[in-house]
Image 1 (cartoon, rainbow, N blue to C red):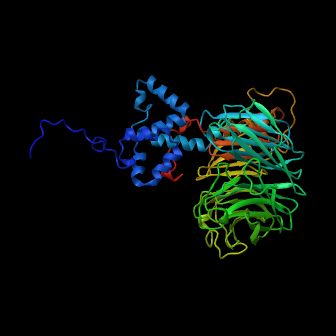
Image 2 (cartoon, rainbow, N blue to C red):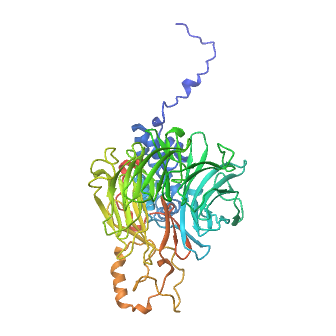
Length: 604
C-alpha cells in the first residue's frame, strides 16, 4: 500500500474523538455525581429504581450522597465540616465520615427528620383570634409548601418559612367546613395564580385567588393581606359539609360539594380554571336519604392514577374521565359512586352504620387501584368500587368509640376513645378487599400495635406513614401530641399543642386546667418520655398541687396535619403551630443507630 506522505493528515471525525458512553451507568463516579448534582433525593431514588446498573451506580457513589446531604441538610453539614476542620481533617474527605459511609449518614438523617426528631427544627406559631382551630392542611412541600388553617369563618394561608407573608380570607358568615388549594394557571410571566375553594355552613362555596411567584410560591403582597371572594357559588339549601376536587386528563378541574341537604353538587371553577359549562353549577346528584358527610375519588378500572400536587384534596387520572369515580358517603349508611362527567350513579353500597369518613388507599399498589377505606358503624371497611362490596378490616372494642383513621401501605391506624391501634391488612381473613364478601367479614385484620395517651384521653387526630404514627388528643394534657415508631410502637417524642413559652409563667393565679386534676410540668419539646418519666414522677410527688401552673402548650389539639417532616397543629386556644424538621440533623445519641430500610432506599 502506498503511503501519502505529501498529503496533509485528515482531521479525525467527531465520532472517533468523542467516545460518548452508551448509557448513564457507564459514567465515572465523579461525572455521575455531577450529573445528579441538581436532583433531589426522591429523584435519585427513582433513578436507582429504574435498573440494576443505575442502582449500583447510585448506591456506591459516595460523592453523590455527600452532595445530597450538603444540599438537603445544610446546618448539619456545616457543623460536620467545622468539626472536621477543627480536628485537622480535610473537609473534602467527607466531614469526618468514613469513605463509603455517606449513604448511611444521609438515610439516617432523613429518617430522623421524617420521625420529627431532628435538631434545628424551624418552628413558628400565630394566633388570629381565640376561636379554636378546626381545620388545618398542608399543600406542596419544601419552599413551595403552603399551610392552611381555619378558625370559625376565617381562613388563613401562609407560605413556607422564612417568608412571613400570608393571606386571610374574609367573606363567609359561618364556620368554614372544608377548603382546598389548586393551581389556577398562569397570571402572567412574573406571577402564578393560586386558587382556594372553601365551603361553609353559610350554604355557600366561595372562590379565592392570590398571585404568587411561580418558582418559590411566595406571595406577591404585603406581609399580611386580606382577600375578598372572587366568586360566590350558591345552591345548597343547608350547610356545606365536604368537598372534593376532581381533575380530568383534559385539564378541566371541577369541585364536588356535599351538604346537609342530602345532595352532591358539581361546580365549575371559572374564572380560576376553565369550566366545561358557562353556568357555575354543572349538575346536582340526588339519591341519599340523609346528610352527606364525606366525598372521595377512586379509580374504577385497573388504569393508573396519582395524587395531584395538592395532596388528597385533588386527584389526577391519566386514563381520562371514564375511569375516575366520585364517591359520596352519608349518614344513611350508604356509599354511592358517580361518574363526575355524566352525573350518573354507577353503584350503591350498604354498610353497617352511618358513614363518617372515606379515603383512597395510599402507598399500597395492591389496594390503591380500586379500593376505598370507609369508616362506618364504628369500624373501618375496605370497599371495592368495581363491585361496591365492603369488607370489615379493623374495629376498636365495642366499648370504644371510633374518632379517626389513617392508612399507609398495609397498615391501618384507628383512633378512638381508648387510644390508637394499628392493624396489619396482610393478615386479613379472606384477603384485603375481597370481592366475594359483602357487608363485613367474620374476622378483621389482627391488631399489631396499641398506642395510649393515658387514661380517659381519646385520640381525635391521627397520621400514619412508613416511619411514624402521630396521635393527638383534644383533651387538656401535658403532651397532647405524641410521635410513635410505626415498626416497634415506641414513643419517640412528646409535643405540646404550641411552642413552650420563652419565659416561665409568673407566680400569679392562673385558671385551673380543664378536665385534669394534677398534671406535672410539660416535657421538653421533642424529647422522648422514657428518660423523663421517672423525673416527672419524682417532681409530682415533691411539688404540691397548688404550685403547678397552667401551660399554654397543654391545650388540646383540635386539628392536626402532617406531611413528611412538617407538622401543623391547631389548639383550642386559637394558636396554630408549624414545625418543620426537614433541615435538621439527628441528635448526638442517634448517630450510631441502624438505618431503617437503607438496603432498599429506592423503595420509598
